[in-house]
Amino acid sequence: MKALVIVGHGSHLNEDSSLPVYEHAARIRERSGHDEYDEVVECFWKEEPSMRHVLDTVESDDVCVVPAFIAEGYFTQQVIPREFGLTGLVTHKGGKTIRYAGPLGTFEGMPDVILERVEDLLRGKEMRPGRTALVLLGHGTDLNKSSGGVIYLNAERIRERGLYDVVAEGFLDQEPEIGEVVENVQAENVIVIPVFIAEGWHTRETIPEDLGLTGEVTVRATATDEKTIFYGSPVGTHPSMAALIVARARETERETGVCPKSRLSIT
Image: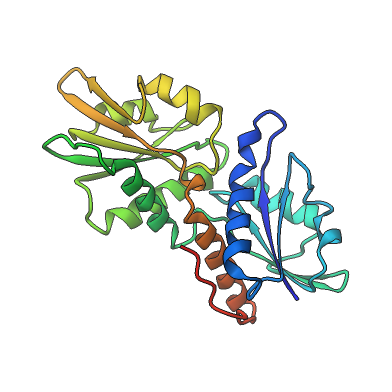
């Protein structure tokens, strides 16, 4: 038997923190028909079910653990391996083989999900004549370069496709600061996509307040021009993330010598 375990951060204060993990797990269950995974299980760091005890509830002997996190960092490199008792990419423990995948944000399929989020945001909306900029918004931290690095990685992958006049990066807790990026970018249309897993205080309150946003579409005058800002929901809440999770798991299984039981289609 095979199991897919999706690990989220969770929060005691924000009930929406765990919602994407539950929604993506449900999508995978509904559309797999249990052909690829006999079990699809959610667990969290700050909520129940706890990642520390989740393997005790899994019957399968072949388990793939996928962290629903954007970047490599403290949680993916230290907390999750510690709580699961992992020793590397593959761990044999308690009669189970546990395969540990990388975070979602570094996976090659992430730019496609970001672009789907952009497409959904712009559907039915009028664009201003002129240049269009896509700004990827990350949390960032000066304590971990990988946190910001994943934003630059995805920006470059999208930039290579030549879809926008400008593809830029902005952050909450490191330079360049998102407000300065939006203010200074040379474009009449500015699309801001938060590269976060879930909705929360930042996406609903601090970011709109800092950018002077009034909703999904805000027309704002700057010192030199006027621009329309399109503000999207976090990329991690997009339904296509379910397929990304499965693709990440498949990649890990291939790299560790396991062939998928079937080709699960999730759209």
